[in-house]
Image 1 (tube, each protein chain N blue to C red):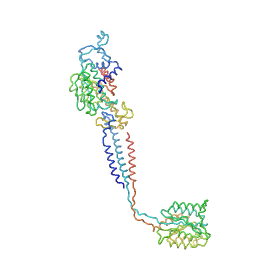
Image 2 (image 1 turned 180 degrees about the vertical axis):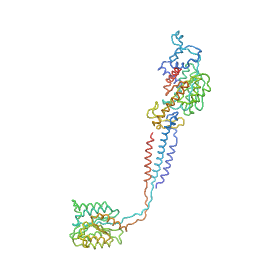
Image 3 (image 1 turned 90 degrees about the vertical axis):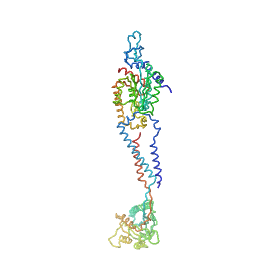
Image 4 (image 1 turned 135 degrees about the vertical axis):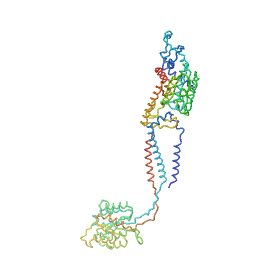
Length: 326
Length: 299
């Protein structure tokens, strides 16, 4: 980049060399003349000391040259040009939480799992919707994870019954029944932005509910699942209760599983250790809409090598300077 | 420019106040002991004179000690032999220029000779050549000799080689003379030893060594932990003083100096030459006095 720094550096090095080589005619003025200096300089001990001195001088000189060269190279800002195809994570995940009375005992745990999920994702947009008889969007789809974590913490506090946090659940109950799961899921599906035609981003809903319905929903779970399938939304169900009696298809757990799997999603009991990894894997498998951007040349500074060399030369120079101190 | 001889005289005057007046002259006079039996005259005893030169009978008659003088003693020739190479422009152990010390020593010796009525000549030079000035009397001549030495020994002069001057003396000077050699720390060698023996056979030789500057810390008259920045007069290259600070180097140098001194002393002793040494011009008169004293006792 700043390659023109190299010739001036070479010139500076040459000038320094010239100045060092030039014999200073006035240097002897403050020295005393002595005779028979060879009686000292020809001593083997002096010769050995001189050889040591010369070796350190050579080391210092090399270190100086290396320092100059490496700092000049570093100052010239070497760049590496790489071609990247930036990959964009185009996934939207709506966390959908049933806050009905039957869930109250396990909502805190569900929020923990959501927080865990939010920590696993990277680049995706997540949103949170809570529902009982009506659905409330706590926060819309966002990639501001800090904000998402904050909101999840608020939710956690509310479910733990911390004083002053009861307002969190305001508006989820309208007296039209409770735990209207189909309506809740449909509301979650509506939280995705509407786009004409096929959505550009893969969409998933993580639905935490025990599927204990009490009241008359506008949409049943099956209808909502069909809507999800229609909109190509994968529904991952997390069931904190999983209290099915037997394996009949009309048991709430089995219904939930059927509904989730009908959308291409999966069903997990909340205490299943596979739950989080399973959901993450499932979401990440919806790679089809991961967009590859146009190939782009990325020019980045690569000062590491010259600066490391400069540091090393500086250290050598420091040691040599210490050894050469008069 | 003040007269070089004037400085010599004032130094000797200071010395004369410290020691008994005239003692130097007596010491000088007794350098030439009993070489001739041609009696010339008597003179008053001066402290420092050889006791055996006292004419006891005459002294008894006169009431104070009298010294016999012999013809040969009366008009001696003193040849000042010195090195005026660039080594003499270097520093001496005391920090002065060696040349200044040499001029002072030559001046004292020459002035003693002059007062004694002797004639003084000069053989000086370097490896490039030797100059000889014929022996004459008079202070003006002595001043000229000193000026010659003072002006010749510069940093631009040729390298020193005192053997050349000694060879010149051996080749050209006839008769028996007093040679007063002022040189720096000459290293002993078989050739030099032979040359000195050859000269000693013909002449009386007094040798004054001007000590060289110490090159390592802790050398005599140097501070124990550092050495002044120096450069060599042969080649003008600076000496790396901090290398000499290495204890191994310093001790090796001290050993080498001691060995060289011992070698030189042995060589001169073997040749029968009395040697004195001086480190600074303040010590010249004392050193010369000691040298003459030692020479008298050695005889």
